Length: 173
Image 1 (cartoon, helix red, strand yellow):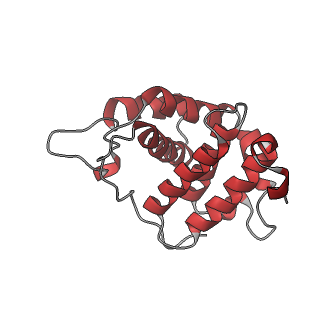
Image 2: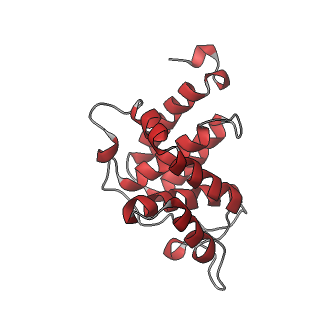
Image 3: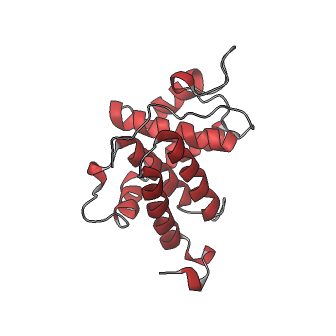
């Protein structure tokens, strides 16, 4: 799953969605941490100091900036994904086809799935469908190919396995 990736999401910060901003930043931070080998705490600190918040004259996602982000949510997602990396990757891998192991996934898609799965683990808030929809929206910002649909399918399967009580019995596969 690669090829149609964009370098940064094409969204403006209009609409005031700091929770969405936190999730976008979490995907970027998890990507950076994996790519650079830097510890999650180091990347969180870098993002808080240099990438979160608007700069004068900028209101979009230029140069990897996230103009509006809920910083505590951002840090919580990155920390949870990093601290539970093996469990997060296992739950994702359990819902990938045999032809798509984790290492084969585009690194941004891998970061997006890790952020979404981490957020779905160990709690009922926000509701699973909200988490899935948020990451689907983010996937559309990063990708123009089949990746958003792929991410939606994987996160839906992960959510159903982690939070079956949120899905009606008729909807279970």
